[in-house]
Image (cartoon, rainbow, N blue to C red; front, side, top):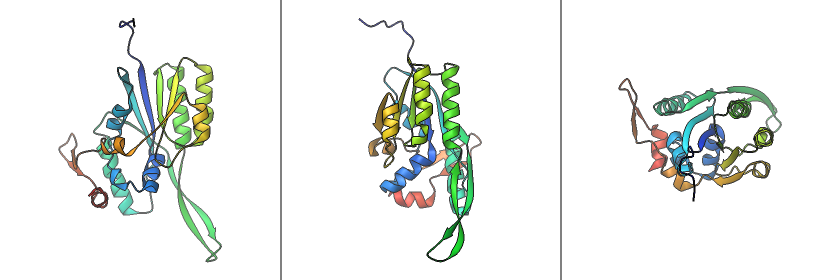
Length: 213
């Protein structure tokens, strides 16, 4: 007979925003970009557990006014939920195109894996969770997961792989692994309109709305 007097298991969720975004893009699931991260967190929570926090890691995009506007609208929608947003950097890097013999620039996101590692390590050391759920397929997060599990063997770290983003290294390091599937994404969408505290209405970006139909 189980001891019902025990406190519920504390669960914190860490979501690698760009890893999930590009996973959905590669799978052709752009219709699910208008994703309520907090609702997704609730969907993957173990039954009877207590959700103590959701951290979403991303960077402000640059280079395209259209992309910036869509991302800003989305981030403002996320801010209407109990979701902590932690920012990295989005930088341009030069590269040489051998086919056209010209130098161009590509944009890359930086610091997200470091930010996730630091946040998870701090939360483990100050005992903020019993179980961590990481939504990412970035193998660079293998060392911090392995270290946390070594230092705190009573804590679990489960990895939820975004579409097209599985990692054998993460699978070995994690307590358990699962997949973010179409049903979870479909059932975790924001409504078409999200109203902020000041009354301003955010709408699913028009480009995303076309994909959703």
